[in-house]
Length: 353
Image (tube, rainbow, N blue to C red; front, side):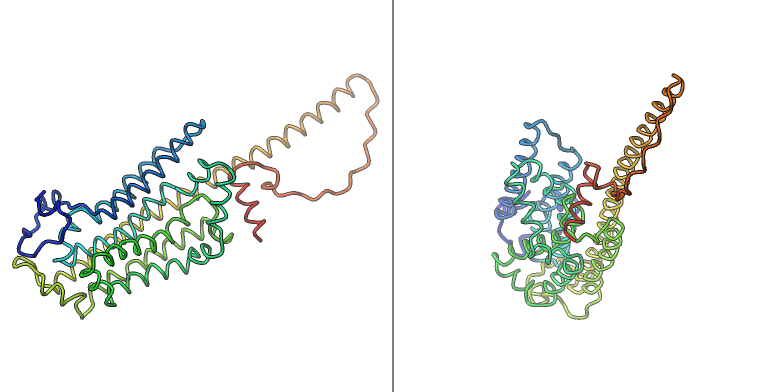
């Protein structure tokens, strides 16, 4: 790691060596706003896990690892690795940065299920406030699947095909705001789809979520294709002026960046879809287990009643006269009588209707 890279400042093009595999792995620079965000998110998540364990609960290690390694790790790589070192002189590192922030980092954060952790770790009054916040009207509108998908696509296109990106390369605070904008847009779609808290409309069942994720994977490919095939250079004046002597042709650099965006988008879509399918399978297992328990209880009651009748006949006692048939009783759905996560969620959904 070079001393210049450690300063966190954008370096003149002539001071940057041509990137190699080893150089890309060892070139890092600090980013104070990103470090603060990572520290706050990691601290709050860690506090929630510790609080839950002190109360006798548990939290899956896989969720903790996903949040820290994939979620926060992607934030660190995007904002402080060689991608940040070279993003002002080459387009492709900036393109990879942006797609990590709006696709991969949100996926890692969502797999950590921070909303569920907050609800389980906080006292009930505060947990209720969290539930109300994530089911409020504004949040419901922003996280409505078609709205959030459109926001992600619009964000990417606005970044690259308006002066937004070129201005962010010149203005440091706007560059940081762009990072946050991309991260927030990605989280609006990914977090509600993967969270176990009911933040989506009741009709967004697991099959519907799987279809939405598949559609989102197709939509996420659009920016990469457009960038790769666009005839006009993106931030061309900046990169033509700041390109080092060893830099490739600016148009080729943009094509490489678009190809990287497309590849990463398609790679992220697969684990995203697998995560939704895994949740679907888990929900089906819980629902089937709850139904099996109910049927076993009903079967046990019937067997016990038959045993009592048989015992009375064997003793020579007259068989009791059959009672008048009871008035027909409304058959209640299983989720109104069972008490488990799936039943509670279905009751909330029917209550919303």
